Length: 381
Image 1 (cartoon, rainbow, N blue to C red):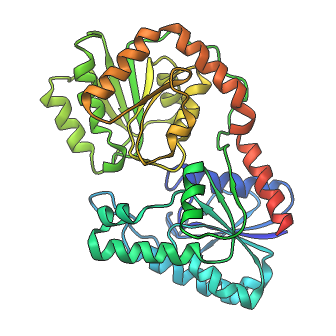
Image 2 (cartoon, rainbow, N blue to C red):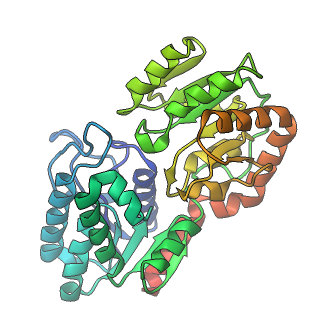
């Protein structure tokens, strides 16, 4: 088949779960002999060529800064990308059997929908997340939030074959009126299906992610400060970077945790994995997650995760409370500290049940399972 993948980011030039998903999908489809085009914004120097074996990378817009200072997506890049996708598909849409696009940043999906009647390709859409009207208002204000919500609503009404990563997202899509098939893909993990034997736990909490307000990584500092009242040897490492970094560093200084809580920024993936493998737990206090791949990565090493019960947090679907981690009732210092102490009190038994949880669910959580589902859907549509 001739397939066009549409996303405005490309791993490793930008780093995130969606970027990894589309890169892995492109490589898998190319390896199986399909003709793959990856349509994206340029994130590399002009003289550089992206390393994506067997995949034709097509630039649909110039290199642009995607985020504003507070960590919000800027409006201009989605508009530019949408225009670039529209221009490309108007000229070349007939060469594709399938156009597979992320729902976000929306205008590219609307562009594909506008061109489809002319070229009659199948349209497949990934809904990594679906924001509520209230969240849009919080994110962009009353006017901007309403516009964003209406654009999202228009995308939902486009006839499509839909995929998402959580039951939360599927139920929201149905509530908002999406017709047709919606498949929940449970697997994004590309590693081994057999869990590694759990290492002995050090008194160490690990957190990782982009330092934006939604991830609430600053709460890791206050939670560790409070938990040290019962676990005086407790330390923490917060991996990542972003606009909240200064706040996190200031929190470390305010609580006198220099040398106890470390925020080294982005580091090689192997360093994150090796540190996580010896940690007491992963602390993932995000308020908004479409999936939560890091929870699965922790479980592969027998490391339990702490997540927060929140209406927009689908990562809670990956944690069975008391089996492979703890679902905290809130993101306050007291609640998160209580969860950390609970993990410490459970001891090695919780690491054993975490590894067993991963072993039971590994096949469904594997990237190959999701790729198989997507390839099968291409044939059906």
